[in-house]
Amino acid sequence: MIHLHHITKSFGTLQVLKGIDLDIRQGEVVSIVGPSGAGKTTLLQIMGTLDVPDDGQVIIRDTDVTRLGQKALAQFRNRQIGFVFQFHQLLPEFTALENVMIPALIGGTSRRQARQRAAELLDLMGLSDRASHKPAQLSGGEKQRVAVARALVNNPAVVLADEPSGSLDTANKADLHRLFFDLRDRLGQTFVIVTHDEELARSTDRTIHLRDGLVLPSPESTPPSSESTSPSSESTSPSSESTSPSSESTSPSPESIPPSSESASPSPESTSPSSESTSSSPELVPVGFPDGSPLPDLAPSRPAAPFSPSSTPETLLA
Ligand SMILES: Nc1ncnc2c1ncn2[C@@H]1O[C@H](COP(=O)(O)OP(=O)(O)O)[C@@H](O)[C@H]1O
Ligand SMILES: [Mg+2]
Image (cartoon, rainbow, N blue to C red):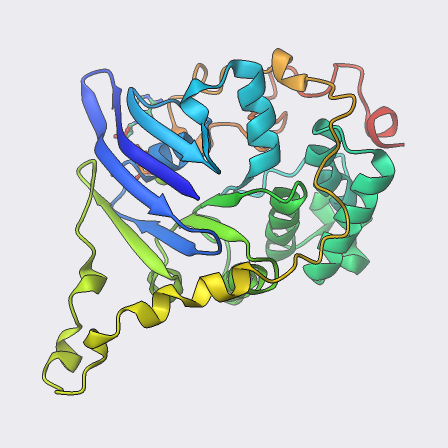
């Protein structure tokens, strides 16, 4: 469902990605691991169309996103890609429900439908009773689950998560990780998760090891040493794992609402400054919306796109 073909990317003289080929199937939960500076975030941003490769192709649901114009790309991103970051990046002045609704509203979904879909998702996250809370009133784990609901609101092809549990304590971490697998099982949702958490990486369907700008040959393809002495080792049936995600992926999605309607897109992307232009730290690239718009809490000096300067929770969501 996602195909990366020979992706290369340099920053100045530093070649960060040296030819990445990667295929991700519908319903897979894939982790990306590697040392700091290996290019994990860069790869995820390119996969999520927030950054462009120097060379190579990114194909998501049969669309070569490297060929899309800026506006089409922003729309594609809004509908097909959900993002979860290390820090929740919820808008502080909006309630949990409103935060979840926002990408749907940007995509042109009616307020009523967006509200219903957001409420369903919060319910799925076990957060119904937190819907009217603002981020400051939520725990770290709750905020991250709201961020996951926001990532799912447009029923995206894939959710890309960059160290999503990096700021959580052990218990909340475990909860969040369970949630990813639960969402895969219930919705057939595809996840690509950059993580330093070895336990999470171990429990994903597949782990991509990134080093020196390249994907290392998969260690899973060689049997673990503890089993290699056993004549009846499982190493002869490597396909047993690869079939598990697809069995769920055909299950009907419980969403009763179409992810977005075609109508009345406010085209907020036209006001969105380039996400690359203002930050040297990719961990802090201030994007929280699927359209890549910067968030005011991380970029206070910039306009709070996608809203007009006069937008308030009342005008946007009332
Ligand atoms: N926008 C940028 N400008 C210059 N260098 C960058 C930029 N983004 C990332 N880098 C550099 O690319 C390398 C890989 O970064 P990154 O993808 O964030 O790694 P990881 O997420 O694996 O820690 C690092 O050396 C980083 O400093
Ligand atoms: Mg990173």
